[in-house]
Length: 200
Ligand SMILES: C[S@@+](CC[C@H](N)C(=O)[O-])C[C@H]1O[C@@H](n2cnc3c(N)ncnc32)[C@H](O)[C@@H]1O
Image (cartoon, rainbow, N blue to C red; front, side):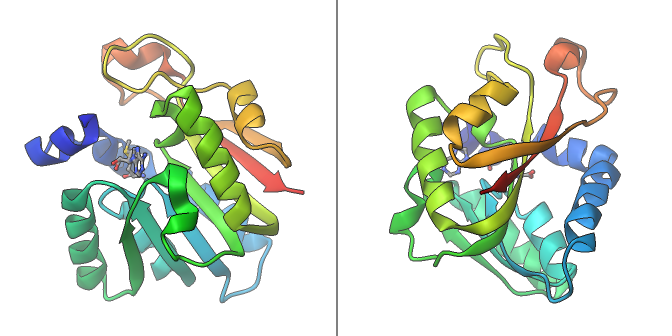
């Protein structure tokens, strides 16, 4: 509901953050690609929103599926892909029931920039199971999460331990800060981090 309203109002500060900190995310995508040879394979953008990063991945040569449950965001995502001249499959659905969406499996790379850390415990466990079922052995997964904290309707954050609990069978192989200067003062303690996990 929060995101539906946010997209409807055009209140999408995470997109501004992506603009200011995008170079850090881009460096993390460079790292993924250094380990592989183009074409890199299949990528799943979990909670893709308006497709900023789905489109960037497609531009870089990934075969991308983006999933989100807000139709307005997906409409913008499709327009973004068209403007960029890339093909991305955007699918409306719940990240806690990915297996029902007919999006295939064996994804080589998965990305979650800001979705998991807003979910409740039940949703986190379900997303963990679903993501794991759709990932190839050896797949990598980048998850951006704020530190746990009380923030009203804003995402409650997730710790490294929360990730380890939800994504059984994955190992956290990197944990990088994503600079927080551009966040509003109320979020200065958010300590956004990008975790890189590898599926065993
Ligand atoms: C902070 S936004 C980030 C969007 C995008 N990853 C980006 O970086 O621009 C979180 C996104 O997760 C989506 N989301 C949250 N819960 C979801 C769920 N249960 N199923 C599908 N999408 C969900 C929201 O609609 C929203 O687009």
